[in-house]
Image 1 (cartoon, helix red, strand yellow):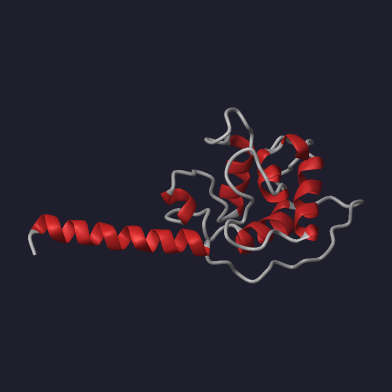
Image 2: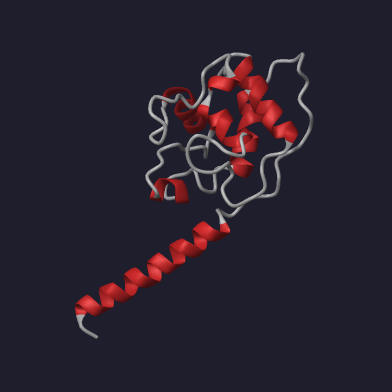
Length: 151
């Protein structure tokens, strides 16, 4: 095989593998603890939100993960990365959309992506897997509503 044929063959195999990965979705961990949040208590990012992100989102939203390979910079693989990215980055797909607007879940693009069956761009997250549970979504909604604190 000529060198250019070998490269073309590798590209075809890599492309096919990427399509299969996309079609199947990112590998998911078992659901995070699905306990109903207490709306009268402070939601802890580290203890309640990050475990959801680690279990449901980090397999794609990490360095070298599917999201990174498709140009999405949002990393949800550690409490530090998750908090910093969610509270400082803006969507590259929806002009000016902040991922998290402290105190306003309805203005938060991240909340839209996990809660809306038809978000402004792309698909509901997690991609290719079941939606987050009502309790997981409510935990994230309350955290944003309470000011999206790094706690």
